[in-house]
Image (tube, rainbow, N blue to C red; front, top):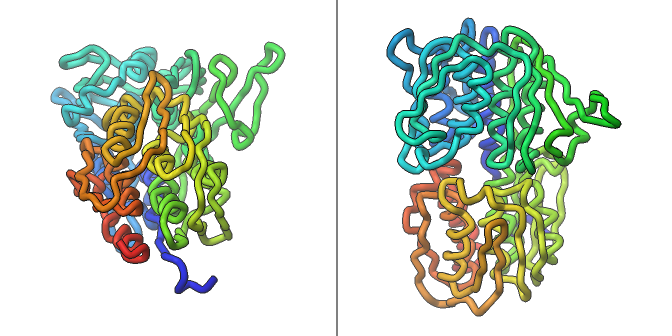
Length: 444
């Protein structure tokens, strides 16, 4: 098939990797050139907070130079250094942990929605490291003030039932501890492991000394972290030694999360879509969109430079998406185009994202004419005739992923309009410009 016969999209840079690379660069001795980081509101939040803690950034075309903090994160002496998170949950969880490993007083705050997103599990871990934690309003939720003199080191316990970002933040902060830190995963279950793998990759790339240990026959044994596919609480721990971040340059790969909308469009539209810049061997959990769409019946081809999805007859499936929660809105919309029901399980943690993504995804599928059921830990999409040839204003809940996923309904013949189209700036400011290529290619 010639290039004229498919729609070509370039994937934006990975948001997850951009956060982590810029954090690591800000911790490095000297300076680090971060090549092609994502330009978005969330990444700007992370850079602003790191700057407040003592880092410097110089933004150039296609790269950002991060000049590392001398002596680690710095807070205020008496008045807190204000870390303004706005609505970036990743920034909040990663940098709250990092502030705990710094020295001084820090205040973590954000939008009203951010103040409804729990952080108590993480702050409990920080208190075990000698950090004084004071909540301004609701116990366990921002705004929160941290007074720290650095991590003590030793043992930390953390549950990942709400978010893997708690562990990622502690891992990124642990090299600043006074002695070796051992982080044990506790609780009933652990979600979103692939994001922890991304954190470990960046730490390895920046020469941090760490090891991963699994419990086997009552003994802790070192294991290659790249072979870990699932975390069982009580059976894995992370040992991080005091060490320095070191890297001259770091290149950020393409984003599977933001590529997912276009890959789904290839399956449900009338013209194949090729998304370039996606590494098929990526550690990003949202690479699972390929396996999910294939399981639903989509024809997909991939090579070293990208992925192509062809128009296909989709069927419903049952799929555990605990490791790739950001894909749920995309898959929910694609499932509305299938010929049988789809059940998505192990996704209770979506209720504490930018919005309650389970209820929101169900509501917008029904707005388009489909049917949906929601439980504590699942969402079921039941295909029904979609409202073709109608103009529908989809609620966006100030949530970038809802805005981008519901755009896919335009391929059903719906005039799909996002209530707040600008909210995509959180992770993909150029989304609508790229989505126009999909609409024009499909004659919408």
